[in-house]
Image (cartoon, rainbow over all chains, first blue to last red; front, side):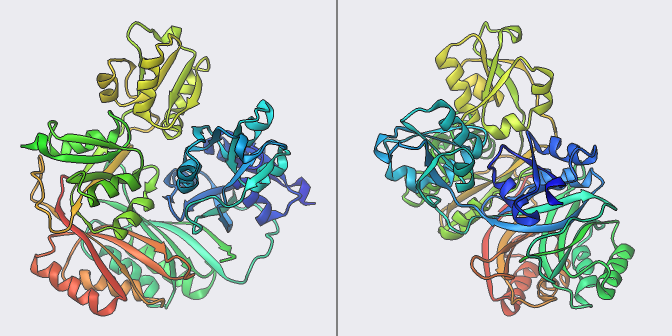
Amino acid sequence: MSEDLRVAYQGERGAFSEAAARRLLGSEVTAVPCHSFEIMFASVTRGDAHCCVAPIENSLAGSIHRNYDLLLDSNLTIAGETNLRVVHNLIAPRGVELADLRRVVSHPVALAQCTRFLAAHPELEPMPVHDTAGAVRLVVEEGRGDTAAIASDSAAEIYGAQVLERSIEDNAQNFTRFLLLLPAGAQPPQIHEQTRRWKTSLVFRTENKPGALFRALGAFAIFDIDLSKIESRPVEGRPWEYSFYLDIVGRREDPPVARALANLGEIAEMVRVLGSYPTRW
Amino acid sequence: MSEDLRVAYQGERGAFSEAAARRLLGSEVTAVPCHSFEIMFASVTRGDAHCCVAPIENSLAGSIHRNYDLLLDSNLTIAGETNLRVVHNLIAPRGVELADLRRVVSHPVALAQCTRFLAAHPELEPMPVHDTAGAVRLVVEEGRGDTAAIASDSAAEIYGAQVLERSIEDNAQNFTRFLLLLPAGAQPPQIHEQTRRWKTSLVFRTENKPGALFRALGAFAIFDIDLSKIESRPVEGRPWEYSFYLDIVGRREDPPVARALANLGEIAEMVRVLGSYPTRW
């Protein structure tokens, strides 16, 4: 019964993370809103939730390193992923019209992603708040006729507000990638609309020498394994040393992937597999 | 005369970007605050400012892809870089004490980076605003005895406020890397405290084939050229195709670097050098 599946996410009801959770696991799951990423990870570790859905990168804003760090510090593993297009809408209490508006509230990142709309409406004063969905709750609760929010259409639905203008974001190529995380060894829940394409995510560290990354990637190149993401990150307190975050196409148990990982283990200082999971991409 | 040097940055007086600009170019430059990154790039392109200083990545929050995009769309080139430790301080109008406080205002990212301090002070209600330096201006202008801001100590100095608690951020390993950008062909200004170490930043795209990145990195590995950053990024509207952002150690004119770039040009679909510049790292 998927309503028995408790899925933690960061944000209020109607947040983009909640939409990602329902898209991955079905609309009937029990969503557990958390105030912060730390609380979200802790709720899964403690068993208050079965799993969580965490944003890991955005096509405009880049990787969310904080969630990589929390994942590395946890015993959670990646069990799935989804990619959500971020659509921002102008949302107001029912009965309010565009001409009535004087203020628009939202998360500062959402406001910054709607600069063209805001420039075309200089009468609207932008006001930052913590959360896009929370902004909708606020305008509905306050019931002011001069204030709108910028958020997802599901936030409008949840709080009984109306969408005045759809898709007011500057850049339509605004996607956020979310990971499904659960305790290592736990039975993965049924993932909706999955394909037969698998990915494996890992972190490794090499010695600090020219050509070290080239050699490490050779472990995958000799088996024709495709990469779908690579990112270097400085190692804390060790200048000029780096960790590498890598996503490869294939399942951890596939013989070429298993052999490549074994070879990488021989030449890297550290390798940790973060998960092997089906993808919709 | 460096007071004649007009340096654009995003944010209000006292922003971290302004501190980065003064650190790179000297305290006496004329800083030109801009409301957005777009306006900042435009002010250099139009000639209202000689150069700008743009944050490009943060050790916790990752790369700021928006600024990479604006750089690629512009005719600006990278002429220098600096790395600033982000220190958050609790700042209040003079005469206000910690015990008087009931609210604390700052940018949501700054509030999120001070969760331990805020958890230890549940009497303080966090309130998000657009900008850390703007938060200090706000508490000073409003003159309320119950509200503090979280921002840099230079913001406290500029607005005549006092620092009540220093370094309240959760993670001391919080660094932001800033790039100095100026029109291609313009005479670079004198950079303070530069070392003899140079970096070259580039973007390239390969064909979508396993091993393509491995081969591209081979162009650098055969000359023992060290990499200091690599990051893949999906190409808009072309699933499973990627651009790569690469920083290498060395100057564009160094014979091995020049030869490696020429080789990469032969095997990559696109190569663009974003700049070759001295670094303090």
